[in-house]
Amino acid sequence: MRPKRALLATATLAVAGALTVGMTLAMAPVASAGTTLRAAAAEKGRYFGAAVATGKLSTSTYTTVLNREFNSVTAENEMKWDATEPSQGRFVYTGGDRLVSHAQANGMGVRGHALLWHQQEPGWAQSMSGSALRSAMINHVTQVATHYRGKVYAWDVVNEAFADGGSGGRRDSNLQRTGNDWIEAAFRAARAADPGAKLCYNDYNTDGVNAKSTGIYNMVRDFKSRGVPIDCVGFQSHLGTTIASDYQANLQRFADLGVDVQITELDVMTGGNQANIFGTVTRACMAVSRCTSITVWGVRDCDSWRGSDNALLFDCNGNKKPAYDSVLNALNAGSGIPNPTTTPPNPTTTPPNPTTTPPNPTTPPPGGSGCSASVSLNSWTGGFVATVKVTAGSSGTRGWTVSMTLPSGSSVTGTWSATASGSSGTVRFTNVDYNGALGAGQSTEFGFQGNGSGAGMTPTCTAS
Ligand code: 9MR
Image 1 (cartoon, rainbow, N blue to C red):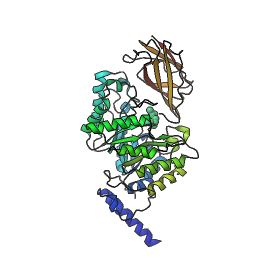
Image 2 (image 1 turned 120 degrees about the vertical axis):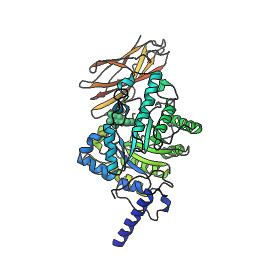
Image 3 (image 1 turned 135 degrees about the horizontal axis):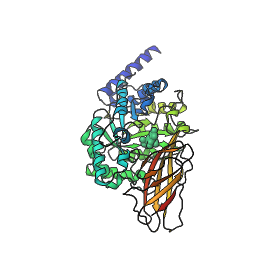
Image 4 (image 1 turned 30 degrees about the horizontal axis):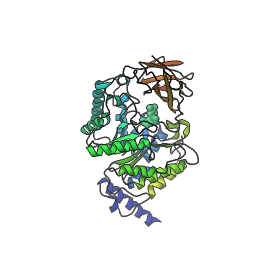
């Protein structure tokens, strides 16, 4: 056994050496089995990452697992717009910088998340529109990407800009209303600010060939044909108890457009299939040579936004779950990236899916006037984000108000694309200046974030 072990150790060093100087993995003589996720991924030229809440970095169970198993981190919230520019032109990098320092001290890469997203917009941006918002958002991209230049290997430049359902089109938001070219404008600004970072478009419910993923595919193809700087597409992969049979084929069709693909927010509903699904996702990524990283959305089950779904690889005590073994085996069995463009460090040797509730429309009579509203929820233990769709009846609207009664003990903590009156009990949300006028049958969306549970809210819409 001894000589064999020594041989394996030498092989590991040879592979690690090849990676640090950016040589091709094909030259590595022998592949060895990594005993941690980070080692196994790095041997194949890839990142294995976790979303991190920096507040937990002082919890030793958490940090022990994080440092041992992951060679990439994503800020769960700290690099988002509301955190980094809480008032216009005042930039706060405390949380994000803390994560970057932790990553640098522990040989991890950093995935930047997210420069622009219709959720977690700061209040001042929520109430902006048109050219003022366009310049504010481009300034945001420029400032934040400049601050983190050279410190992140990839940025989610734009997050979740496509609509759910069968349209394959864009989601309505104040960002989208600044003009359909807002996404490419953001990518150009990000490239100018940080030419070294891979620039990604990131979304959910794209885990197979479907209308939404095809809408994104068409955008990426268009961007590539017109020279808009896009380097990668992130597939969040918040999964339930099944996985699309064409998960890998979908990754491959994007890779074939000439972009990297990354699994960015992986978590899977607990249950008999959890380990298999984690394994299937990992095998799919390993089988696509342009799949450069896998990130799970949290470390332990109790760190997850999905609360009781127990959706991650470690239990709350930091013990490995069967899903962990499934992922590790798939990493070790997979092939390396032929010409890695990133050199994952490995010195110590990531909508609303299953918790989405079906829309609950207050149905007006067909063809009636007035308006209707439906709500979909993303919930986690202690909080939720509600997205509310307002649809005008046959007469259109000049303005609208949606009333919703929150469960007792719950409260609204932030609202976008509407003005809230009250924060608990029955809360009335009224249109802002740019989304009150809707033509017959036309829709708009607003949203709010709350503490507590958002379960069972029924919206009532009144038009003016
Ligand atoms: O995990 C994040 C949670 O802590 C936040 O409260 C929530 C707010 O919208 O965002 C969560 O992360 C989201 C990510 O940024 C984008 N994709 C969906 C993720 C889960 O909601």
